[in-house]
Length: 220
Picture (cartoon, rainbow, N blue to C red):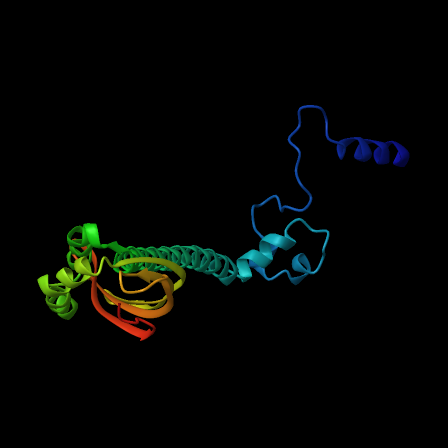
Protein backbone atom coordinates (compact mmCIF):
# COMPACT_ATOMS: atom_id res chain seq x y z
CA UNK A 1 0.00 0.00 0.00
CA UNK A 2 2.81 2.37 0.74
CA UNK A 3 4.13 1.86 -2.74
CA UNK A 4 0.80 2.65 -4.29
CA UNK A 5 0.46 5.83 -2.26
CA UNK A 6 3.85 7.04 -3.48
CA UNK A 7 2.91 6.46 -7.10
CA UNK A 8 -0.30 8.47 -6.76
CA UNK A 9 1.60 11.45 -5.35
CA UNK A 10 4.10 11.43 -8.20
CA UNK A 11 1.31 11.44 -10.77
CA UNK A 12 -0.52 14.28 -9.02
CA UNK A 13 2.48 16.63 -9.17
CA UNK A 14 2.87 16.32 -12.92
CA UNK A 15 0.98 18.97 -14.93
CA UNK A 16 -1.70 17.56 -17.15
CA UNK A 17 -2.47 18.82 -20.62
CA UNK A 18 -4.57 21.96 -20.39
CA UNK A 19 -3.60 22.74 -16.78
CA UNK A 20 -2.25 26.28 -16.11
CA UNK A 21 1.51 26.42 -15.75
CA UNK A 22 2.74 28.05 -12.57
CA UNK A 23 6.26 29.55 -12.63
CA UNK A 24 8.26 28.30 -9.70
CA UNK A 25 9.94 31.69 -9.51
CA UNK A 26 6.61 33.42 -8.77
CA UNK A 27 4.66 32.76 -5.53
CA UNK A 28 1.13 31.54 -6.02
CA UNK A 29 -0.40 34.11 -3.63
CA UNK A 30 0.92 37.02 -5.76
CA UNK A 31 3.31 38.35 -3.15
CA UNK A 32 6.83 39.35 -4.10
CA UNK A 33 9.58 38.01 -1.83
CA UNK A 34 11.46 41.26 -2.44
CA UNK A 35 8.58 43.09 -0.74
CA UNK A 36 8.26 40.65 2.17
CA UNK A 37 11.92 40.88 3.09
CA UNK A 38 13.01 37.54 1.60
CA UNK A 39 16.66 38.39 1.02
CA UNK A 40 17.23 35.02 -0.60
CA UNK A 41 15.10 36.12 -3.53
CA UNK A 42 17.70 38.69 -4.56
CA UNK A 43 20.78 36.57 -3.81
CA UNK A 44 20.14 33.84 -6.38
CA UNK A 45 21.34 34.90 -9.86
CA UNK A 46 19.18 32.25 -11.50
CA UNK A 47 15.97 33.52 -9.93
CA UNK A 48 13.77 35.40 -12.42
CA UNK A 49 12.79 37.85 -9.67
CA UNK A 50 16.37 39.04 -9.21
CA UNK A 51 16.36 41.75 -11.93
CA UNK A 52 12.94 43.12 -10.96
CA UNK A 53 13.92 43.44 -7.31
CA UNK A 54 17.01 45.45 -8.31
CA UNK A 55 14.87 47.72 -10.49
CA UNK A 56 12.55 48.44 -7.59
CA UNK A 57 15.44 49.25 -5.31
CA UNK A 58 17.13 51.57 -7.89
CA UNK A 59 14.49 53.90 -9.35
CA UNK A 60 17.19 56.56 -9.88
CA UNK A 61 18.67 54.46 -12.71
CA UNK A 62 15.72 55.36 -14.93
CA UNK A 63 16.10 59.05 -14.05
CA UNK A 64 19.81 58.97 -14.94
CA UNK A 65 19.02 57.43 -18.33
CA UNK A 66 16.46 60.17 -19.01
CA UNK A 67 18.92 62.90 -18.03
CA UNK A 68 21.58 61.45 -20.31
CA UNK A 69 19.08 61.36 -23.19
CA UNK A 70 18.04 64.97 -22.55
CA UNK A 71 21.68 66.04 -22.37
CA UNK A 72 22.27 64.39 -25.74
CA UNK A 73 19.33 66.26 -27.28
CA UNK A 74 20.50 69.56 -25.76
CA UNK A 75 24.00 68.96 -27.07
CA UNK A 76 22.67 68.30 -30.57
CA UNK A 77 20.57 71.47 -30.52
CA UNK A 78 23.50 73.49 -29.19
CA UNK A 79 25.77 72.16 -31.91
CA UNK A 80 23.17 73.02 -34.54
CA UNK A 81 22.83 76.59 -33.28
CA UNK A 82 26.60 77.03 -33.10
CA UNK A 83 27.00 75.64 -36.61
CA UNK A 84 24.25 77.94 -37.93
CA UNK A 85 25.82 80.99 -36.25
CA UNK A 86 29.28 80.10 -37.54
CA UNK A 87 27.91 79.53 -41.02
CA UNK A 88 26.19 82.93 -41.00
CA UNK A 89 29.43 84.59 -39.86
CA UNK A 90 31.36 82.94 -42.67
CA UNK A 91 28.74 83.95 -45.23
CA UNK A 92 28.84 87.59 -44.11
CA UNK A 93 32.64 87.66 -44.18
CA UNK A 94 32.66 86.21 -47.69
CA UNK A 95 30.20 88.87 -48.86
CA UNK A 96 32.36 91.64 -47.39
CA UNK A 97 35.42 90.15 -49.09
CA UNK A 98 33.61 89.98 -52.43
CA UNK A 99 32.58 93.65 -52.17
CA UNK A 100 36.16 94.69 -51.34
CA UNK A 101 37.44 92.69 -54.32
CA UNK A 102 34.96 94.36 -56.68
CA UNK A 103 35.94 97.77 -55.34
CA UNK A 104 39.69 97.19 -55.70
CA UNK A 105 39.28 96.00 -59.28
CA UNK A 106 37.32 99.17 -60.08
CA UNK A 107 39.90 101.33 -58.29
CA UNK A 108 42.91 99.96 -60.18
CA UNK A 109 41.34 99.41 -63.61
CA UNK A 110 40.40 102.52 -65.56
CA UNK A 111 40.93 104.12 -68.94
CA UNK A 112 41.05 107.75 -70.07
CA UNK A 113 38.27 107.15 -72.60
CA UNK A 114 35.83 105.80 -69.99
CA UNK A 115 37.04 107.65 -66.90
CA UNK A 116 33.58 108.97 -65.92
CA UNK A 117 31.96 105.51 -65.87
CA UNK A 118 35.01 103.97 -64.15
CA UNK A 119 34.98 106.50 -61.32
CA UNK A 120 31.19 106.29 -60.98
CA UNK A 121 31.60 102.63 -59.96
CA UNK A 122 33.95 103.70 -57.17
CA UNK A 123 31.79 106.49 -55.77
CA UNK A 124 28.65 104.30 -55.87
CA UNK A 125 30.34 101.79 -53.56
CA UNK A 126 31.42 104.44 -51.03
CA UNK A 127 29.82 105.43 -47.72
CA UNK A 128 30.66 107.57 -44.67
CA UNK A 129 33.99 109.43 -44.71
CA UNK A 130 35.21 107.69 -47.82
CA UNK A 131 32.13 108.82 -49.74
CA UNK A 132 33.06 112.46 -49.09
CA UNK A 133 36.72 111.82 -49.93
CA UNK A 134 35.89 109.97 -53.15
CA UNK A 135 33.52 112.62 -54.42
CA UNK A 136 36.17 115.26 -53.75
CA UNK A 137 39.19 113.36 -55.13
CA UNK A 138 37.48 111.99 -58.22
CA UNK A 139 36.09 115.40 -59.12
CA UNK A 140 36.27 117.09 -62.48
CA UNK A 141 39.85 118.33 -62.00
CA UNK A 142 41.52 114.92 -61.62
CA UNK A 143 39.37 113.45 -64.36
CA UNK A 144 40.46 116.15 -66.79
CA UNK A 145 44.13 115.55 -65.96
CA UNK A 146 43.84 111.80 -66.47
CA UNK A 147 42.03 112.28 -69.77
CA UNK A 148 44.67 114.72 -70.99
CA UNK A 149 47.50 112.37 -69.98
CA UNK A 150 45.73 109.41 -71.63
CA UNK A 151 46.23 107.53 -68.40
CA UNK A 152 45.35 103.88 -68.14
CA UNK A 153 45.68 101.38 -65.32
CA UNK A 154 45.36 97.63 -65.02
CA UNK A 155 45.27 95.98 -61.61
CA UNK A 156 45.15 92.33 -60.60
CA UNK A 157 44.53 91.11 -57.05
CA UNK A 158 47.32 88.82 -55.94
CA UNK A 159 46.06 88.14 -52.42
CA UNK A 160 43.05 89.16 -50.36
CA UNK A 161 41.66 88.07 -47.00
CA UNK A 162 39.40 89.29 -44.20
CA UNK A 163 41.32 90.71 -41.24
CA UNK A 164 38.30 91.28 -39.00
CA UNK A 165 34.55 90.88 -39.15
CA UNK A 166 31.66 91.57 -36.76
CA UNK A 167 29.03 94.07 -35.72
CA UNK A 168 28.32 95.17 -39.28
CA UNK A 169 31.98 96.08 -39.84
CA UNK A 170 34.73 94.35 -41.79
CA UNK A 171 38.37 94.96 -42.63
CA UNK A 172 39.93 93.40 -45.73
CA UNK A 173 43.63 93.34 -46.56
CA UNK A 174 44.83 92.94 -50.14
CA UNK A 175 47.93 92.88 -52.33
CA UNK A 176 47.48 94.17 -55.89
CA UNK A 177 49.80 94.11 -58.88
CA UNK A 178 49.26 97.29 -60.91
CA UNK A 179 50.52 98.32 -64.33
CA UNK A 180 49.84 101.89 -65.50
CA UNK A 181 50.85 104.15 -68.35
CA UNK A 182 50.36 107.69 -69.69
CA UNK A 183 51.61 109.78 -72.59
CA UNK A 184 54.66 111.02 -70.67
CA UNK A 185 56.19 107.58 -70.11
CA UNK A 186 57.78 105.50 -72.85
CA UNK A 187 57.01 102.17 -71.22
CA UNK A 188 54.27 101.05 -68.79
CA UNK A 189 55.22 101.19 -65.12
CA UNK A 190 54.48 98.51 -62.55
CA UNK A 191 53.72 98.81 -58.87
CA UNK A 192 52.61 96.67 -55.93
CA UNK A 193 49.83 98.04 -53.77
CA UNK A 194 49.09 96.89 -50.25
CA UNK A 195 45.66 98.19 -49.31
CA UNK A 196 43.31 97.86 -46.34
CA UNK A 197 39.65 98.37 -47.14
CA UNK A 198 37.19 99.01 -44.30
CA UNK A 199 33.56 98.22 -45.00
CA UNK A 200 30.24 98.95 -43.31
CA UNK A 201 27.07 96.95 -43.81
CA UNK A 202 24.17 99.02 -45.11
CA UNK A 203 20.60 98.03 -46.09
CA UNK A 204 21.79 97.99 -49.71
CA UNK A 205 24.74 95.75 -48.85
CA UNK A 206 28.40 96.26 -47.95
CA UNK A 207 29.86 99.71 -48.63
CA UNK A 208 33.45 100.99 -48.46
CA UNK A 209 33.91 103.36 -45.52
CA UNK A 210 37.70 103.85 -45.62
CA UNK A 211 40.70 102.99 -47.80
CA UNK A 212 44.29 102.93 -46.53
CA UNK A 213 47.22 102.42 -48.93
CA UNK A 214 50.03 100.87 -46.89
CA UNK A 215 52.51 100.58 -49.74
CA UNK A 216 52.71 101.63 -53.41
CA UNK A 217 50.43 104.02 -55.19
CA UNK A 218 52.92 106.05 -57.24
CA UNK A 219 51.36 109.03 -58.89
CA UNK A 220 50.79 109.00 -62.64
